[in-house]
Amino acid sequence: MTDAQSPSELIDGRIAELADWRGEMLARLRALIRETDPEVVEEWKWRGVPVWEHDGILCTGETYKAVVKLTFAKGAALEDPAGLFNSSLEGNTRRAIDFREGETIQEDAFKALIRAAVALNQTARAKKKK
Image 1 (cartoon, one colour):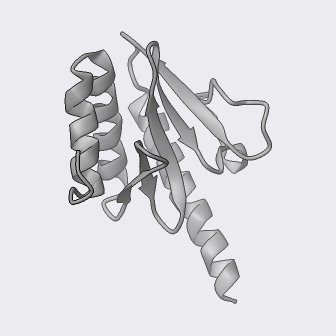
Image 2 (image 1 turned 90 degrees about the horizontal axis):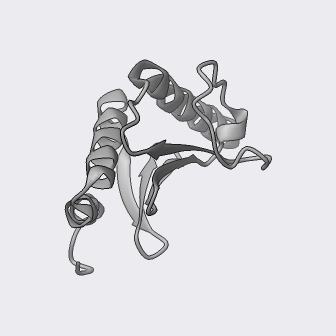
């Protein structure tokens, strides 16, 4: 991977290099994020972390041996009626979802979290402009 690659190309590369269920899971989550928010901006930060932004960070996508972790930057402020958040629950700001091999994604609930994260960022940005 080179600096000349776009963040989206770097994320494509990460998915390809994983070459197992984690790559498939990250690709599916990415597709759901992009489908839910067509205006989402993909970034590549902190030496190799995929980041999705819309008026601020929505979530990051990290891959570990046993999980694909999506961390929502302002997750503690989001309603989660389906109980998707299952990691990083102790903090005051972030919340994460750990996806494990073989798990299915509750797509409607996940999309609702993405929409809520976008709305929260837009509300915060509108307040800053005033």
